[in-house]
Figure (tube, rainbow, N blue to C red):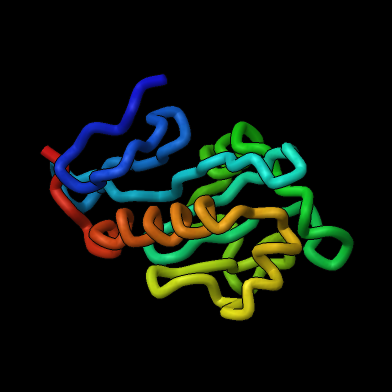
Length: 144
């Protein structure tokens, strides 16, 4: 597994699951789009966490039906590469988007949602740490 190597992120990120694009307006600048990490739940089934620069969320088929079944990384990447236009992937207005955490921690402070998803305390802390690792991308940054 190749890891992302730049002067921005400090944690290990799989290069194949870390999307950036070259800025058309600023030569030599790459803009962060999204990153993904698959965690194993306590019942050993996978759950994909999607990250943008400032938040971790679930990207699901239908939040009304079942937010436990996240869209696989490969499908998310294909969709973003085909449709991404200025942040054009699920956001808080989309029925496929379930926000779970930002750099301050999980939105559900009770821990009930984390437990319902089957995410361990260690993985929950890792998710918040990864949001913080990506915070420098909230501004356009020269990666060269």
